[in-house]
Length: 253
Figure 1 (spheres, rainbow, N blue to C red):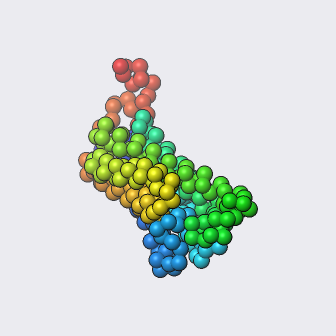
Figure 2 (figure 1 turned 180 degrees about the vertical axis):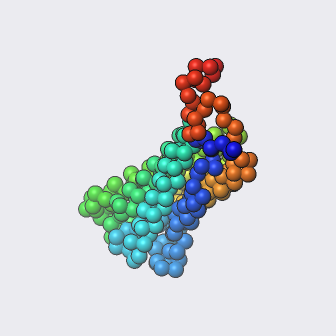
Figure 3 (figure 1 turned 45 degrees about the horizontal axis):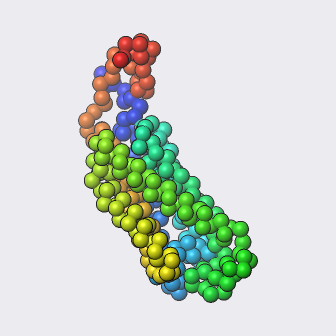
């Protein structure tokens, strides 16, 4: 008789979970449609967030994409945390991905009033302090989105290479992490000169999208490996949900 699969088994993850992670990654790079539906916005110096500014065409579409991608990221991270119950660096990584989703939703809700790097009048409004609270607070949510995404990337990279349980993450997250952190650090001097900030931010967003797709591939292959290996043998006194009985706890060193 086949034993029930215990908790923390990747095979218990829903089959749709990799698809949700992949969709989140694709939708998060919706900025590429700028060249079709809003080509007037400066892609070199204008921030990606300016596409969602309330005075821009199709701002609702770009805000909706951030909201949708954030929601999917929350669902993916929450299910992994619930089913696999990771610890250590893995716990930090998945929690950070969940927060990434939360702050992405915040990014969509606190949209900018206008595009300061493409509209001189908007830049003057910023300096005069006549923009809305949402416009001002948007810089906070955007910073938190980038920070949580980088923390997730770094933490899951460390976990994958240290524990050896996620071969796809161990192989591909390292170069992705190097590109993302290098781009982030490279943005700092460009902020001083005010040059090519839009280009650098678009690279950052694209790397995060790639990261979400890498996660999707890992979830897919990890689930397939677990299913192919069959259910792991349980301790005679273990419960089907993977938790130990009192007898096992008393006899396990």
